[in-house]
Amino acid sequence: MTNHFRHVLALALTAALSTAALAQTATYQNPVIDTSLPDPTVIRAQDGYFYLYATENIRNVPIYRSSDLVTWRYMGTCFTDRTRPQMVPGGSVWAPDINYIDGQYVLYYSKSTWGGEWECGIGVATAQKPTGPFTDHGKLFISSEIGVQNSIDPFFIEEDDGRKYLFWGSFRGIYGIELSADGLSVKPGAEKVQIAGTLTEGTYIYKHDGYYYLFGSAGTCCEGLNSTYRVVVARSEELFGPYLNKAGFEALENNFTPLLQKSNKVVGPGHNSEIVQDDAGQYWMLYHGFDAADPDAGRKVYMDQITWDKTGWPQIRNRQPSSSAAAPIFGEAAVSQPSVPAADDVRAVYSLTGQLTESPAASIVIEQYADGRARKVALK
Image 1 (tube, rainbow, N blue to C red):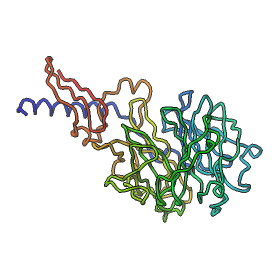
Image 2 (cartoon, helix red, strand yellow; image 1 turned 180 degrees about the horizontal axis):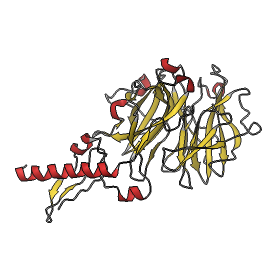
Image 3 (spheres, rainbow, N blue to C red; image 1 turned 135 degrees about the horizontal axis):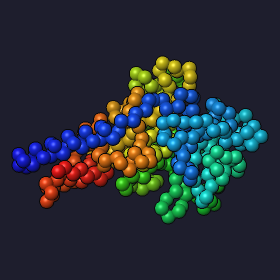
Image 4 (cartoon, rainbow, N blue to C red; image 1 turned 90 degrees about the vertical axis):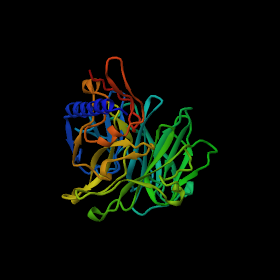
């Protein structure tokens, strides 16, 4: 590389960082919801708003709405005392999973009593609007019926061919099974398949650049400042595995790669929601955690950005919850947002995987970064 080229490259990188810093002036503070909402699940609905649902510390399953993932408004509940699910009488509704399937909102949920690991199960409810009312369709299965102890924490995924699957489990193995075409029952004759061992619960699978990423939460979820909850990840080229950690060892043998752990301000971060993208293409993960300064308030909702390293693995800065960070970008701000990484992620700027070329107009074009996003910065 010539001295001239090094000089122009340095100018390009400096300008890229400066432009990004100016564009990303909006920030947010964690927690984004200062209320106990364990095990959040999030969807961007057909009306353009984000909706969040959670384990029912607010009875009958709370619903929150946001336009920007930062400011949330309580909208009501999925059920009433009259319409709440009747399976597992006396149980609570835990760890819902919201989806939009064939023109309706489909909510998978767990119903359980604490310690009732063979009596708990997973059910499903539907609604025409994200705010409900939701109509319960009853159980998909109970632990004793499906042969999986502690059958809670459902997660739904639909493949490109339209086939639908449910994954579930909590510290007794993670399993998956095919669902019917409408997603409201187990497909007749389908057999469950184990994809991970006994380390995790809170299953979430995200497909990115040819891999399926299996996110889970390990440790104790609910012991306040003594909680050891944390988020871990493994990946596979196939939906049903084998899932491997970054070192190549199997998730079936409880091998995962760490993603998120406690900080001095947040204890027990885990049970992440769906990964969602803002209008600028950035990835965001919401999850619960105990505020170390206010642990009796329960598990509040936090958010952090996910980026992807040069080998394709997800990462969160410092592997810890942030206190404050650049906010997600939506609407007109996303249209005007320069295609460069955030100013606080310098490593992404220097980890170039594309070509740097000098144009006829004496411009430098940075074509791609390690996280895979296309980036173009031209200087006169």
